[in-house]
Image (cartoon, rainbow, N blue to C red):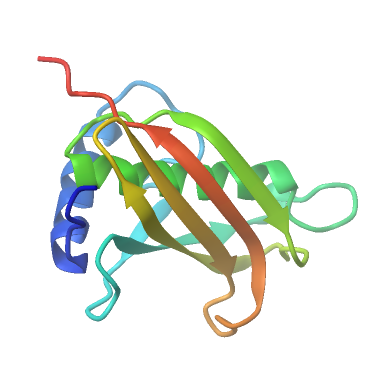
Length: 155
């Protein structure tokens, strides 16, 4: 198993990846530094990052809550970025992901996603994510786990 990056190293590497991804012509949602931002945390554990994203009215399903596909895409993106940053890789595609919906996500709020690295190997990484409102971090709305393929950068 590889050594996990400190919070500061991971934050800095994420900024480099964001710059590369922002130049991509792909306009998929969510896009780092456009829709999702990294929240700087001084005391986060190694291999973890905290992200912030605004849930707006356009993301609502017919029940008046944020659509589960939106939150699934958000936690998937955050886990993939965290894996990519630790491997200084431009891509860590999802191998598998499980999402659990504990509570409805309301529209018109900012949410935070905490990602933790469970294991980081040479060819894959296992990560977990928790989505919550910043004012209620103990009340999880969505949890997820994912396995990500680690691809070497193309030269």
